[in-house]
Amino acid sequence: MSGASGPPVAEAAALFRRLGYTVTDEGREFVARRKWRTVAVRVLGAEEPVTDGGQSDDAPNLRCYVTSRGAAAALDSRLAAFDPDPEWAVVGLDDDGHEVVRAP
Image (cartoon, rainbow, N blue to C red):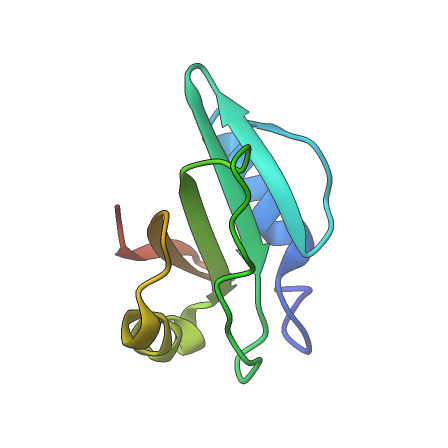
C-alpha cells in the first residue's frame, strides 16, 4: 500500500469511491456523499492522537476514521474511550483490501 509510511489518504478516498460515494477532497479529512448519506472521513496514522475533531451544527452525523489495517483495532479502542458525538466507524486498509472494525 502506498501509504505504508504514513496515513493511507489516497487509499481511503479510493475506497469510498469504489463504494459509490462522491469524495469532495483527498486530504486527511474529507466528506463522502452517497444518496442521503454524508460521512465525514478522517484518515489517521497508526500512532496519531485522536480527538473527535469538534462537531458543528452543519457537520455530517456520520464519521469514519480510516487507518492501516494493523492499527485499526487500537484506533477503535482509543475512540471508544471518549465515544465521539456523531455515529462513527473504523476502517482498516492494507494491500489486500479493507476491514470494517466498527460500523455505526
